[in-house]
Length: 131
Length: 134
Image 1 (cartoon, helix red, strand yellow):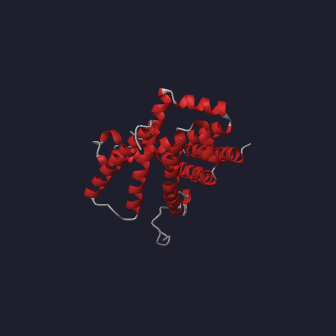
Image 2 (image 1 turned 90 degrees about the vertical axis):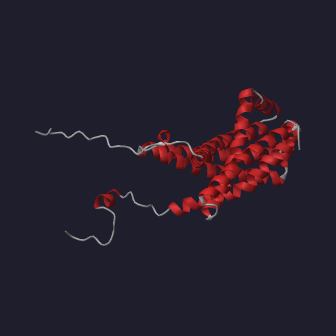
Image 3 (image 1 turned 180 degrees about the horizontal axis):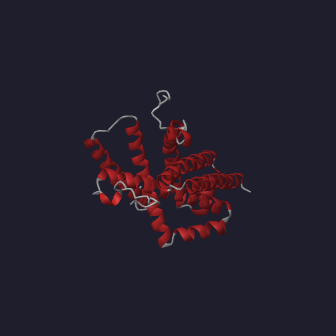
């Protein structure tokens, strides 16, 4: 028997190449760093949104037209969809085992997340510039 | 003698959720995931709200009309609870990641705090929305 170094990975495992992709830590950290950013962002959105709610349509327009609120809403869209897509990816990886279905579902989720981030940001921009 | 084509035997699976007795640890973990999925739906609703607001008064009024049906209100109550729960439980997770409150007793205590805090925050939010308090 020929020795193949000190690797504990089986020859079959090596051929299939399902080992660590070496990007796990970055994904893990990203989910958490964005989560920390979302704490003040979402609290600001929920509290200031609720404060303007009784004023109806015009109060809501004024809320989005304030530069600080518009900035926080756009940041919330960016961070929220990034965190949401990363979270849904973990759920999909846990329950969808067929490789092509798994990759396809994650792709669709990421696509929707990016599309809705753009739609939300453009809506804020339209309200902000008062078109 | 043995058959020429071996039929692969169904391997035993490890026991899944329905086998175990529910415990506060596992139930809260499932809740964290469930509320996270709910919040992903909430992000879609946030964009719909922004698009409706950008669409003008009639568009916005139609959106508010949907939100004020009992289905819409029930969804928003569930969404607000999901937000506060996921926020509190998320902080708990971040503290765990930093190495705090990992003793079993602390896990139970912080779990109860998270549930209580998220229920109280949800109640306060809706009292505020209906103009009863704050």
